[in-house]
Length: 441
Image (cartoon, rainbow, N blue to C red; front, side, top):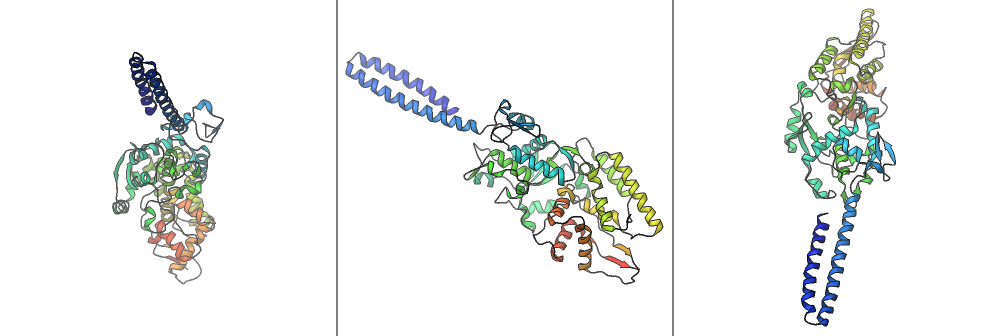
């Protein structure tokens, strides 16, 4: 609009000036007057053409803004959707987004459905609040641009950073080496720290530590969610809404999200109404009431039931009741000495700390050896047996490596059938601290 205002002001000024010149010329002769009028007409046509060009730019700029909620033709996730499939102004108003951040509604719905189905942390996601939280962080990292983001603009967004999940303020940016050092220094209390480390556009396709590098394809990490990346691309540029969605979905930072939480979500600090004190009390309850024996005799089945119990409940009291019921059954099995002894408590705490798309980031404690009784007096301590044992426990329930990555937030290669690849998974889960699985009489 600034260009239009300037053109309009220039038109008035030039018209007035030319009119004065015309009056002066009229007193001389008609020929000069006609000449001046012709000149004025040329000038006016030129100015009019300039105004039309600027008006065209204004129209294009307007097309980059969200449409008013009165123009909604549909509704997704409770918000209006325009004829092109983008959320209308009511979504931006609730999320606190500027009007030039257009969000593709179906892509957002895909993300919500994926996370509510697979993360185990939420039964319902407040997506406007969640994206609004991400925008508050993103806006402190991204350069100020007019229109779409270019590749140069994207390259200027810091890749490694720290932010406060309560105030949503970015507290520092890192170099790669600083980021590695900061994340390596985490301990059990880190899960309760409001300061979180983040990655803007991770390279999740890489198996080594280089997965923390900035991805040249910023949509690659979120492609499995299908957020509608093509709706955001224009030649070699990406719209503001697209950059924000790639950051929001691709960074896979669960702490941006808010909604109705399960016990897993509460333990991870994703419920603003569940305090740190309550989280610690609940964690202590589980630790002080360990479930140490297989209930059914099927170790894999019992382990999975225990791991997913925190995903099935939203009410703390109901969860505690179910936990104590399982503990009583475990104790009964121990007394009868009929089922295999299994150190559920240690492995549960470790696996839970890594599941639900890295819902909980705390370091795991060292494990004690897992022991099982059998009629065979021999003791086996072998890496392959250890890997196959844990692999069997997990793959009996989770048939694909993708499911393992979803549950435990692990990075795997396409071929996860080999012991080598599974040992990578074990290492990333923190289970490499297991010293041995003893099977003896």
